Image 1: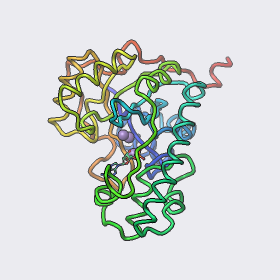
Image 2: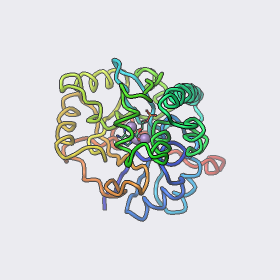
Image 3: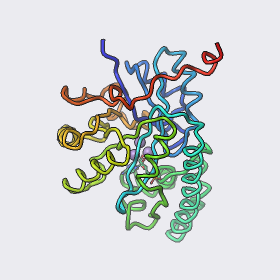
Length: 290
Ligand code: AMP
Ligand code: MN
Ligand code: MN
Ligand code: MN
């Protein structure tokens, strides 16, 4: 049986709602055999996830989803299979968390002017001490009666041009790929259809990503419909990237995006886990002492 891969998921260490143990158990129960935990700009959940995976008999790939900028567009770069203790990567992620903290303070100032009470404390109260994101503000605003759904709160308050929107001070695409590669991992463009780029610009993104050391792009994604998958399949063929697969699962509140339900990759594409850049499985720490 071919293993079932899901290489993009979140826990409450970023903006997901499950603990690493709950996420891993749910993925294993849903038939996922190889799971990457890819929290935004933070790797604190990986140790617990690795313990849970060993317990459930599935493989945990260390991951992270890095917030980056390419030509004024915020893009997300998934890093997979790296050493989380590598200094350039961990220092870079720490800087991104500082930028998030500063952005959150500015978002809170603006939201207060729009009549939201205690937005900073409210949003941090829904986080788990690792990172703060727009998702935490959205959950708080929704709880305060500023919108019935997360989508509505994003649309009216948190998207570009809306009262609570503050652009992030993210890292360049080249630097993010550099951190991941020097930490021994592979870099993957997350959910490419989400960036609303023209087709020619998207192809240029894929080529520049490959030229700076990137390995793959997500072709099958929880945020892609069938037409997006076809488009991204064409662009990985044209750009020479490998293909990745990830649900972008954030928790059971979004039942339309459940674990273990992703379609297979188109047959002719090279899966990222078969690419020569894909890291060898590192033995757990205690095995290396033998
Ligand atoms: P940030 O990285 O702080 O800008 O927050 C981005 C996160 O917000 C993404 O990773 C998504 O999980 C979430 N998000 C963005 N747009 C929406 C939306 N329309 N509805 C729900 N969640 C969203
Ligand atoms: Mn998210
Ligand atoms: Mn993302
Ligand atoms: Mn994600």
